[in-house]
Length: 288
Image 1 (cartoon, rainbow, N blue to C red):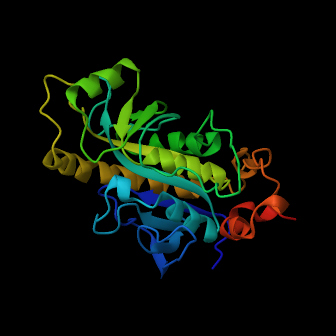
Image 2: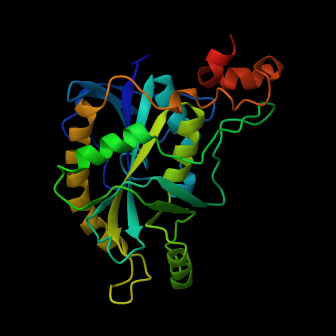
């Protein structure tokens, strides 16, 4: 199935379904990189085609380090998705960013250890530009849509991605604070890297659930705290996404769709047949 220019939404903790989505079908995909987190829910939202995937599975059965990021993004590409928004629960690393606020990060720092952040390798080499990891057109549209979602929205910031699944130690939390980061999470950076390689636009909606453990006057982070704040945050995220989808321009004016144009190091003709087959839907236009 090819949906052609659809909008992809990756639901994070607490966002396991997309309210208002008129479901057309559920699609179970196989990919060269293994199985995605769940079936893709394809439907219509605000007059636009939308493909939804619960990042951790609809029963939240996958831990951050167990996520098959490559399969998830590859599946969106296979379904014709051009833009992806990753929704994620995060901790605040700044005094002024409170639980229930939304942050729209424009930068990332990677502190993961076991994540695979590329489709390439095994005879196929590419180095995409990643200085600005978030699509400016999609990020701008999110910022405009967020203005009507009924909570405080921070239109920029740095997302620190840690390995998890444990939360930070207090020493780590204070160290990360000294770096000036805005929020801390465990999932979105591999998605951003892979979306760029797949020439898809990517942006994050970070839902703040806690102050991490650096905040001396707040209780330590717990699952109970996260779930309580998530219930409020998810409703806000649903409103934001419903406002975003119909407002997106039909055409992309960013450079995301040409990310591989000057990134391929190995000439496609010199790539092993297995690599060309594995990467087919990603590099097909460069095989001509």
